[in-house]
Length: 196
Image 1 (cartoon, rainbow, N blue to C red):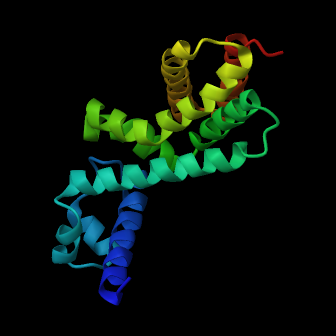
Image 2 (cartoon, rainbow, N blue to C red):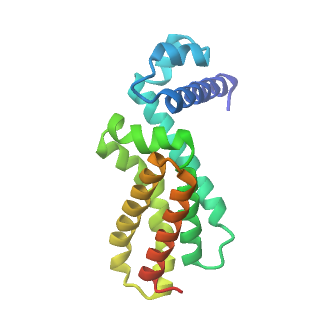
């Protein structure tokens, strides 16, 4: 890769990181392009070279966070003893992440409204939902569930995880809410996958 391309990628990363900090702290509506320029130290021309505007920048921040969340979930579930346990550990990891300020504000609160439901779901399908469906398939096969049920169950699990994550994000005691949510998801998985 040539030096100019490397510099361009580094500038893009700096803008995304500065915007992520601001969006996490102030929310999508509370951040202006001027604030991102000041926080990143780049010129207006450099920012608009990489992003058409605030929504495109927010989309890039959200997509980077979705990829990061997927990597964390994968890493935490990698040592699980079975596909069902990997699915449960991955759910636990996601619910733990729901306690983080940036995840609460950007992923759970602002992304659906700022990007619109369709774009939000499309990005999630590339990361979170795709990962969930891929993890559910071997667990379902091991439990003897018909392959045709993987897609609907994946949607049900995603809805359950998202709803519990939203409860965690708004809870006064997010740790207690996360623990209750983890227990509920494990119970649900146990019933779906018929595991003890």
